[in-house]
Image 1: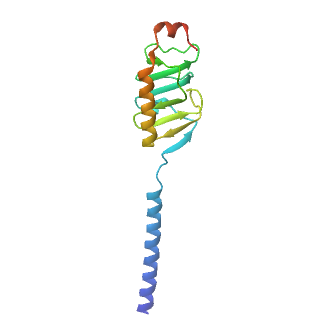
Image 2 (image 1 turned 180 degrees about the vertical axis):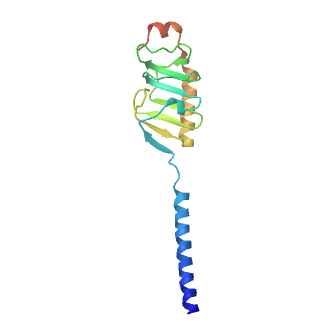
Image 3 (image 1 turned 90 degrees about the vertical axis):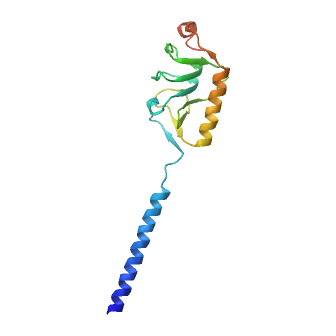
Length: 150
């Protein structure tokens, strides 16, 4: 009887340990993806936003944002922001310190986009922003008053 109880106890212990290891491995492997789609987002989720806008729609912009824009919605007030114009921009994205939101269309609230925290992608977007920022020309007060759309 003691041998049977020992074998049953041993089997129950091995099965329990196997289940515990399996559950533990699942948690380790369940990491967040580096890239994910979104249609609900807020620019406030992005620290120190740097914006590349081929087409800038109406959106509430934080005061610390840096913006390079090709064209923007008529009536949009960009006074008081660090804004430059560049006619060669392709694409729309908002780059932060630790993530980027790449949008499928104009920069406007709840536009379909893709969040990424992938290091290599962030480095490429940072290089693109910095190169474009250096080549862009500051938006003058006259442009902000008269030429809201190009």
